[in-house]
Each structure stands twice: as C-alpha cells, then as structure tokens.
Length: 420
View 1 (spheres, rainbow, N blue to C red):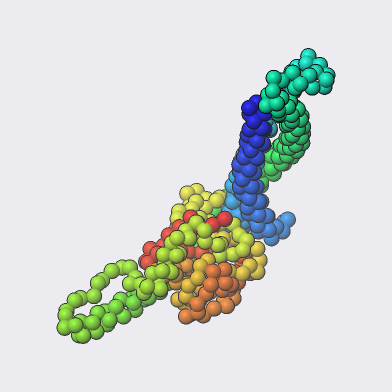
View 2: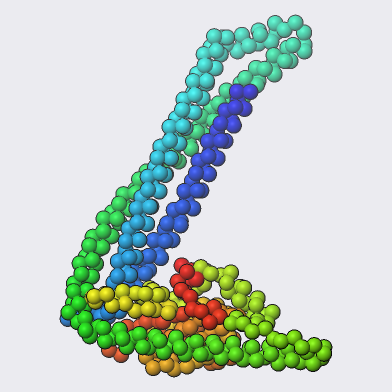
C-alpha cells in the first residue's frame, strides 16, 4: 500500500509540474506576441521618422508618429515588466517545486533506509529461508514466499522512484537556471527601452517646441485638412444615401408588384437602414461577428491620428475631428480590403486623392488617399485583396492611409474593429 502511495505521489508531482509549465508557457507566448507587435509598430514609426533629413524639422504628421512611437514604447516597457513578473513567478514556482521534490526524495530515502535496517535485523538469506521452512503447512510457506518477493520488489520500486524524482529535480534545476537567464535578459531589455524612451521624449519636446513657433501655419494647414475631411465625409454620405435610395426604390417597386398581384395596398417600410437580401444580411452578420478581428487595411502601419477629436501638437487648443483613423505606412504600401464585399464606388476627391468604398451588407469601409487603384465599382473583393496603393506626399514623402468604417449612414471608430 505504501508503494502505491509513493507512485501516486510521484505521478502527482510530475503532472503538477507539467501543468504549471503549460500554463506559464501560454502566458509567456501571449506576452511575447504583444511585445513583437509593439516592436513592429515602433519600427514603422522609425521608418516614418527616417524620412526627415538631419537638417529638417519634423512635420506635424511625423510628430504624431513620434507620439505614437512613445506610446508604443511605454506599452512595450509595461509588457517587458509583465514578462519579468511572469519570469519571477516561474522562478518562485520552480524553487517551490524543487523544495517539494527534495522533501519527497528525503521521505523515500528515509523509508528505504528503514527497510534496509529491517532487512539487516532479520539477517541473511538463510534467515529468510528459515522463515519459509518454519511454516506450519505448504499454504503458509507459499504466502511467506509471496510476501518476501513483494518486499524485495517494493525495495526495487523505491529505488526507481527515488531515481525518477532525482531526474525530475535535475530537469527543474536546469529550467530554473534557464529562467534566471531569461529574467536577466529581460531586465537588460527594460533598461535599454527606458533609455530609448528618455531620448524619444526629449525629441518630442524639441519637435513640439518647433511646431509651436509655426502655430499660425499649422492652424492654416488644419483648416485645410478639416475642409478636406468634411468634403470626404459629405461625399461618402452622398454615396451611401444614394445606395439607400436605390435600395428603397427597389423595395417600393417590389411592394407595388406584390400589392398588384395580391390585391392589397400595403405601403413599403421606410427606414434609414438598408433592406438587405438574405446574402447581404449574412455578409453583414459575418462582418459584425469579426469585430476586433478584421485585418488592417495595410500590412504594416501605425495609427497616427485616432477617430474623433484630436489635439494638434504644437498649438494652443487647436483640434481636428477625424471621421476615421489615419494610418502612417511605409512608402509604396499596398492597401487591402479588410473584409469581403462589393466595391460601391471609386472616386477622386481633392485633397484625398483616390477613394475606394467597399460595401459589406449594410457596413461600408472607406480607403482614402490612394495613388493607384486596382478595382472598379461593381467588383467583388476578398478579405486582404489588394485594392490600391497609398499615395506619398510629394514634399515630405509621407504615406498616410485614411480609413473609415460606416454602419448604414453612421460612421464608427474603426480601431475597435481591427485586430492585432
């Protein structure tokens, strides 16, 4: 019975070690993935900032990219700190596991030593034979032989279990040493990232101070930007309203035909929402289900201006209301449809270059500031299909995609819809 208890203890310790290792590994992978994403954002921001020559000041868009880079850097430091905490918890768990293994090994050794002492007290093998021959009958002799064999096997089992626990302890010790090395590496990364952050904040202060000296010029540029965004918004609203009008007109005619056939006079429903076909309804439902998981409209990019009210760096209270998000990208970046759908329109708008609007049931995605367009109205597009190329500013070389998301006639913040 004691042998069975020892085996169960050994199995329990091994399974617990495996379970904790698996849980720790999952958490580590999540943190490492997040760190990789943040490092990619920082690299994109570096690419945007490298376009500025040494003798030129940062542009407004680059200052916004720098701000995003600083936010990403701060998030990266926080992630590294989480990794350090995870590593410390893993080290603590491994130390506790080693202590538990030591206790189990010592317990088994004490039991084994007791068995050896008991065997020594009984004497030699001749004593064991005498123990068997002293039986009153054959049945008792067989029982005593069985007992002696079981006792001998149990001693061997104890030795095997001690060896297995010692092997497991050696594995955990090696894992502990590796984890301590990972922690030292992470601490070095944290120090390095904090030094980078200090430099970037100093660069930001200088850039904002330079922009402040050009506040009147920036204010003029913002007025122009507001005008362009308003024109873009109005154009998109007109396109969506026209789509809605056509659909409602089709619904009206269909209702009239049904009334004529049935001899009824049921008026068509009037709504600001689209009357979707079964296919369109399924597509819209699929689109909504993928909220938070839609691919980015560019393979690499950072959001340099968020949806809604944004303060303009280097100005005294100047703001801009963004109906979508602005995404800074590497030069020559291709633009991708974030979901399958139909191209509603391709139009050129002053200040926004070419604009592509894709319909997904009663959802619309808008891709603005495209230099080249690879699709035309009526085309069916697949998720991640390339639909164009981001335009570059002729003076600064900056490439920024303006991306919007609409549900019926209401635009929404695209950021929560995009995955990472």
